[in-house]
Length: 619
Image 1: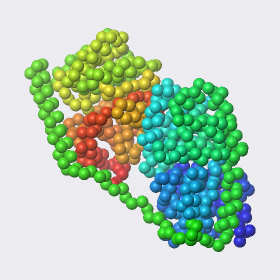
Image 2: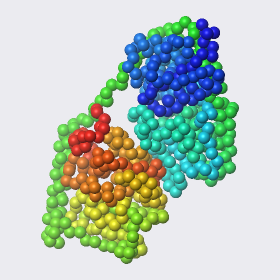
Image 3: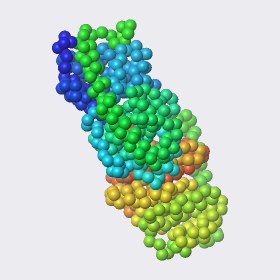
Image 4: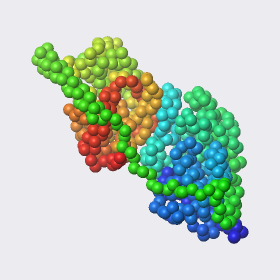
């Protein structure tokens, strides 16, 4: 029977609604199978059948879980197919995939580390060393590579911390940091995510691809798919130390380092070194070690084993139940003492309201009005014709506001004005700002000094109401801009006239490092959590259309920017993300958000009530 299967057609199965990365790998296997002289097809709409074909199932945990088949049907499919596993050992997805390998004659994995782990679990296993296929190669002349540095990968705290360290190096270059959440399958409709030819074109436009491991405990897992795609397109890979990369060679086919920033800086200044590594890597994956070379013997083995009598996959003959139930619904968030926390929050809000009422009474006694605002302007303010108005809200940040203002006036290639609202600070912030104005007379600066505190959203609304430009950059008094930020965000709005606002990735610094506003505009993601900070460039007409930041609502306290983004989404608008690190976000142990988190469940319910038509994720 195995003789009848020699050269048999190859069917490569993959989930149609699963992770797009798996579909790419499946398409490579189809292409390499054709290179062996066999016919091959990508199959998404049925289970493998014993039909004299060679059946390979890519990412079996996704393929079977996303279908509605019985355990018996899956067992029959497993007996006439070979699973191709792609997940990293130590993750829940790796363990889940093993449950769907039971009954198959042997298992294939794309990574040497995973192959060892699968064999240790008692399975017969073969290694598919990924290499290039002809359709990957979209190389272009180095002079046509307009992206200096590229990162593509799932968002993790470890990656965010390390990418933040690249910010001082990349703010004045064309860098694209494309992150996405790891909590749901990525199918290709999400922002910043590309597959197939679109990904190859992106890599062909890029000089350097940065590769960072998911976390500190993955023991240097070599991300083969990401590496091969880059190498096939002449994009130099800079990676943290890895294992299991043979037959590739470190420092010949890719650059391995513990200091990614230093390595990237050196390569950016050394085009000859980039050319040498890119050419060697392309030769390795496309000519010396193409995918077909590794796949061909595995197909022969599969043809033979699938033609033999079915046998248990695991050594020792133990049969185990297939774990194929659909994932259980997400459990509700664990919020102990939620009623007590809500009462504390309500008490804090009442105390804040009382303090503002007292502020207003004092202001009326002093000035005859409960809302007295004094204005101070720089010498250069009256004659300025700003393209962008930067609004800065100040409350008790006298020690850092000067750094914030200095970062704004250091902006390049843009005419900007600054409107500052001092929301009745209790420190000497007003004096610091007035001193700054005196020392920078040519800058266009307006200070609105309030003698009664009105709260952050109302202070922002006051500042924006004085904006003279048709686009407004919203800033907190403790955050910073890189010099290219205003120009690049303004250009993004020019490129997308329908966008309501533009925002860039921010480098978090202070109490902890990381990234903020690091993912593109995607309403389902936004309904999960607010990942877009208030530090964004908003069109003035957007603010006017939506009525500005919501005021007088305790259940959006500290979440006013999130509520505005949701309101824009509910109205059919959208934001545009510039995937570069163009600003800095100061992290602190205590903040307004820490107070808001006391009432988070009630506030989330309130947001759903305010915007019921958005695609909220049911929990």
